Length: 78
Image (cartoon, rainbow, N blue to C red; front, side, top):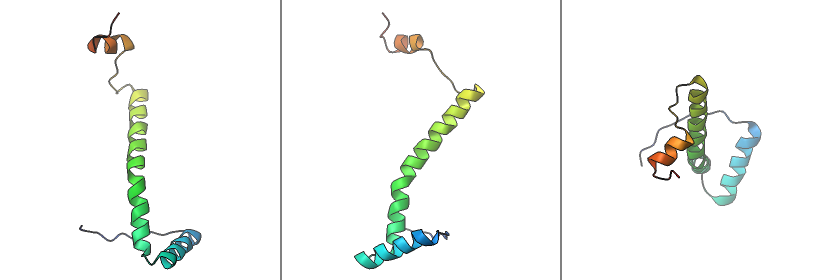
């Protein structure tokens, strides 16, 4: 896997926690930081996608359909 270097500033308490975890397990801080970032990116992307859709809805630019239109398009009308 190709990698890139990224610099970030951490609060001292968080950096200390990564230090302790790395020492206790024999893994690197980079390993744990990469794991943490990878596990949160899906959730962050999903949340921002929802926020964007809400903004588009409020601005009137999001294409919507009524429940009746949806039911009809799915063949579920009464």
